[in-house]
Length: 90
Image (cartoon, rainbow, N blue to C red):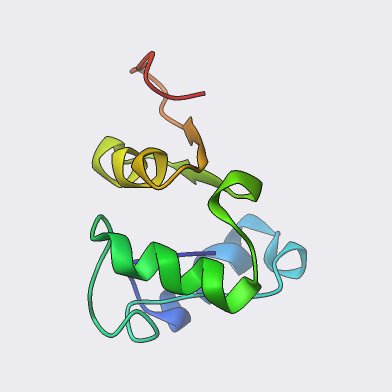
């Protein structure tokens, strides 16, 4: 999980959704040096930490701005929204 929020908030959300056991890591705003998405450096830091290249990464987001950066870095991208679609993303 890569979030602009806090680790505690992400943990609460994952627990409420019943999926906390499906994720191994949470990268929060503190780990990103308080530099939020959509700045590219936090994305690079997550990939570096995971030893994963952009072409082996996927970004699932509800924010188009955050997906634009991911796409520019070479990641696969998925926009998750109920009412809006955008052909720029997978």
